Structure formats: C-alpha cells, structure tokens
Image 1 (cartoon, rainbow, N blue to C red):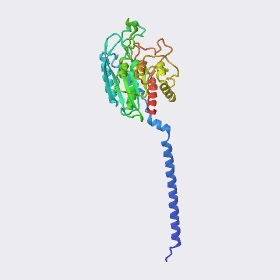
Image 2: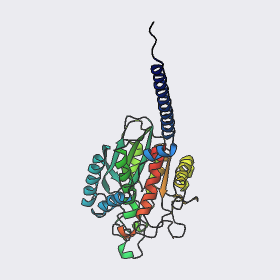
Image 3: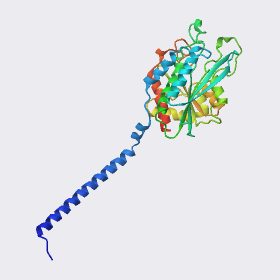
Image 4: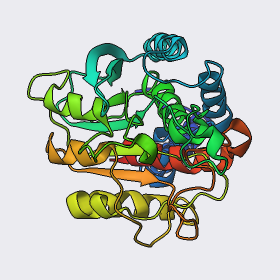
Length: 344
C-alpha cells in the first residue's frame, strides 16, 4: 500500500474546511433573504399602497369643466344631447361596458322629456357588485337665485350635477385599468333628476316630480333581476368648504353603509369633510333606489345647516359655476370611494 504524503493530507483537510465554511455562509445568506422576503410580502401597509389607486383631482376637474362646455344640460336641448353623447363615448373609452337607457318621461307639467340613463359596468361577470350613481342633467330653472328675473333661466350646474359625474368618471378611469379584486362596479349617470316642480309653477303639488330617471331605472333595471350589495349617490361633491353630513334617508335605509363610508373617510384623513353629524331628509335619487329597487343606498351630499335651504350657497342659482369648485373637495369624495372600493 502506498501512503500519501502527510503534507497532502493537511491540504485536503484545509480545503474541506474552507468548503464547509463557505457552505455555512451561503446557507445563512439564503435564510436571511427568505425571512426578509416573507416579511415584505406580509406587510399590510405595502399591500394597501399597491391596491388603492390615487384619485387625481386635476383629472376630475377636467371632466367637470368639460361638461360645462356644453352649457346647461336640460332635457330636450341640444346641449343636453351633446353632453350625453360625450359621456357615453368617454365612459366607453375608460373601459366600461356601456348601456344607454333611452326614456320618454312625463314631467310634472305634462311635457315629455327625451332623456337617457347612461350605465357603465366594470367586470360584469362578478356576482358581488356595488352601485355608484349621480345625475348628469341640470335644473331648467334658477328658482333659488336672489334675482327673480333669473328664475326661469337654466343653471350652469357645476356643483349640482357635474361634480358627482366628474368624480365617478375619474373612478371609472381607475376601474378600467386596475379592477378591484373581489367585486364589480356599476356606474349609473341618471337623467332628469332636476326637473322637479318649481315653486312658481302655479300648479297643485305633483308627487315624485323629481328624480325621474332613477325612478324609471328602479322599475326597469338594465339587467333583469339586478342586485347590488349597496349603492352610493354623489350629489354636490365639489364646492368649497363642503360638509357631508349623514343624510336622514341614508341612515334610515342603509346606516351600516353610512358608517362604513364615514369611517373610511376618517381613517384616511377626510373627517373634516365627512362630518360626524346628522343632516336633513333629502328627496334624491338614492331614495328611489332604496324604495323601488330595494338596494340599500346612501347619499354623499353637501349639507349646510347655516343656509336657508340647507345646501351650499349657490344651489339652484346662476352662480353654480366653475369658479365655485374646489379640487380638494373632489379629492376628498373620490379618494374615500376608491379606498372603500379597493379594500372592500
């Protein structure tokens, strides 16, 4: 038997020792990397940052101003038709599955209104759904204007109409690119909400003369047996110093949804807008979605306890114009809804 030299044996032992040391170091590095990766994956704050889009108030403001370019959006007028065409094409371009619901509606005075509801559905295959809505028409009469000579003139409708639509359009822009994980969303722009009987009409009071488009849809939904877990109306969500109090019918029909929205707003820093107080009882589109469609729905609406009519100072006047809009208010309403949708 030939014995190997002792010097060769020492070298082999050193090599083995070095290899073992390197292996131990590599194992520790792999273990540390795995732990760090696991911690990062489970971080809820980073998950929220990835999930919830950022509401762009400049984009919403652009959508609002674009509506005003058509002038008052009163049924049976050219401006109304042109704006409706714009809304249909824009919502389609944002990724919504569009349904137009043409209607012949009879107003309080017997006149027939050529109107249409505009419906954009996102992820229609999902069974869990929520409903977001606003009205896109404007009031034909500035019957709250301080100058009586303006009472028969149509309002611009920057806050009362265009603001809610603009916020929903910006939300639609995100829905079309990044779908919420667990639910689908339907956005409805209701028509003929603001054609309610004015006080100067001289006629006896006609019941349910407001919110004609939502009444029609509630009786004739765009999808047979349509259902949604809840609905949220945006009405007058763009004025400076807005206050969104908890509206009476919202609390009566859908108190848990009210609390969910207001808690969401508080969690992300918008409690100065979403005031923890009760507002008045307001006849609005959500009332008929509750009563006729049976979908628990709430109203996010600017309510002022210090004005004669309970609304923002330029409600139903010729001064409801673009210069009264505050982008920060649009942001407060829009970001709160995005947070709710994407973490629901």
